[in-house]
Length: 207
Ligand code: FE
Image (cartoon, rainbow, N blue to C red; front, side, top):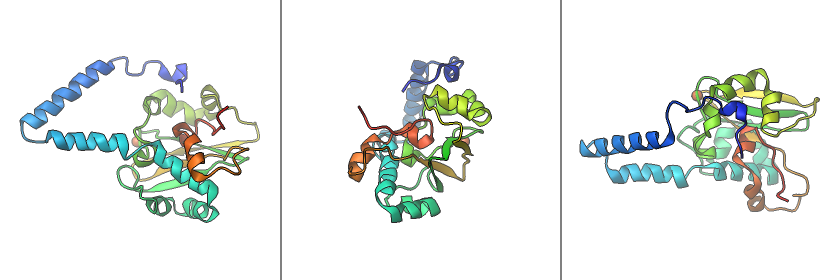
């Protein structure tokens, strides 16, 4: 998805990506050279970020909630335990509150202080999640920010903004789209996007 222009302005302009990559490589070689880290350990961590965590995990939780009413009830009552039962726990996902979108409430997540985010379920946060523009504006004018992401909500839909902290992370359970009544959980998981679980997108059936 494209990041809204207003959120882009000013972001990372003081340091480009090549610069960051060069710094990371320099840091890794120094750590290895001084015996503070092993290349294999660094590779294992990077690999874990690339394969163990990511939005495919959150999507499986949402798809199961859509297809298993008992699990959904558990998820909304005790997100941490319900999610841990599927094997998703640890790094930045120790305590999770799942919030459900309905016809009357739409939930959206922010970390106003920094960029706390449920890594295990959603992966590494997108750049815009860290921008001061997103963090400040989504609290003050959530409807306008959602509209810039392409989410137009009816005037009667209340928007609940959840401020994540180091202690508590949120997972939005988006609304299941119409026309998917006979889909399996695996099929449903394919269409649950990262952004829909942050609350800045709706889940739609691909054309
Ligand atoms: Fe934070």
